[in-house]
Picture 1: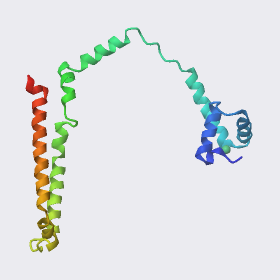
Picture 2 (picture 1 turned 180 degrees about the vertical axis):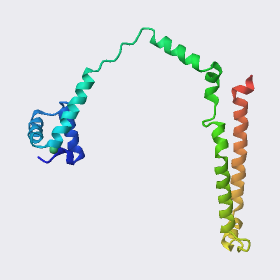
Picture 3 (picture 1 turned 90 degrees about the vertical axis):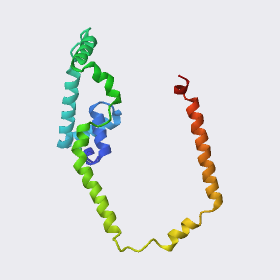
Picture 4 (picture 1 turned 30 degrees about the horizontal axis):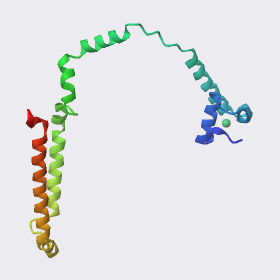
Amino acid sequence: MNCPLDTRENTQLLLDYCTRKLEPDSVAILERHIAICAACRELARGQRAVWHALDAWEAAPVSADFDSRLYRRIEAQVPWWTLVVRPFRPPFRTVTLWRSLPALAMACLLVVAGVVLERPAGAPAPAATDRAQVDSVQPEQVEHALDAMEMLNEFSRHVRTDSPDSKL
Ligand SMILES: [Zn+2]
């Protein structure tokens, strides 16, 4: 067999071998390879050492009052008003905003410079096709737009009267 370390899929085969997830046939093939391949032997030895260490590790027992002591420490370190205000705070701090102001100003300057350079003072007026587009708006289109705006106004008036705030 080719060395499993040469391809990613076969490296997984080697890891499965170390965690004893492989079928007996594959184990036999792999063990024959490991016997002649120093790199795979070293990897398998390291993996076994890790698994032994994990098996030997025991977590310290948790005391019965762990939760209450934890919550007391959290409350002691965070003032109560921070807990109240936290959900309403903006995603970034004001200090961050002030620090980023020079970068924002530079970005605005670049945009303005880009616009000025793109359209110098003697730039020709917009092409005739632009004006033709504006002229070609049909009266029905304007009427539809006005109807839609009226419908939106009606809708927002209904929403305002239906909202629970207005009943208070
Ligand atoms: Zn190998």
